[in-house]
Length: 146
Image (cartoon, rainbow, N blue to C red; front, side, top):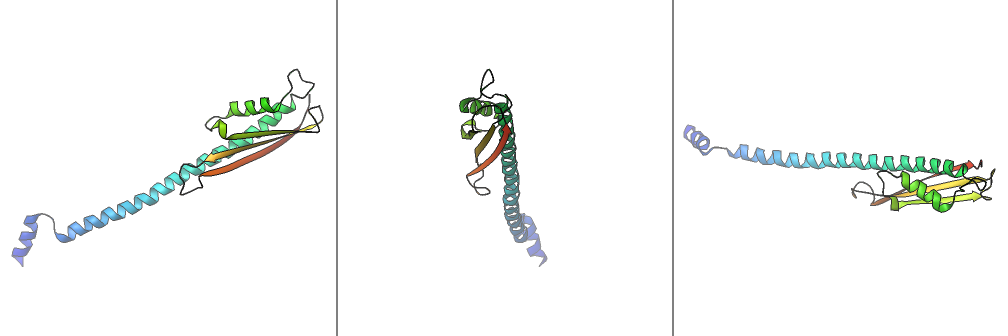
């Protein structure tokens, strides 16, 4: 018995130690998958939250932009000028994925209402956690003052 133990020690690593090393490798791999999924899920959720906050901000600012640029203003707001205003504010987002719609009710005169709808197709980075594309949108409405 003593001789067998010495032979095992002479060979270096026992069978039990080798199998435990393999078990530790498998446990580490499984743990890393879970930790990486949580990390990327958190990052994706943060990006989606940022996109939603920007869309809400952009709709509010575009409505303010349009309400002070009615048809009695020196430079009245148009659909194109509102779209350019929103896209110029888009920091950290893909401007081509922004859709802006302005609706005047009944027209662009002072006292009328302007309604702005901003939508953004948020491209998902991690397809396993969120769908490949998520749409976020926000609407703002104001009364034209000029």
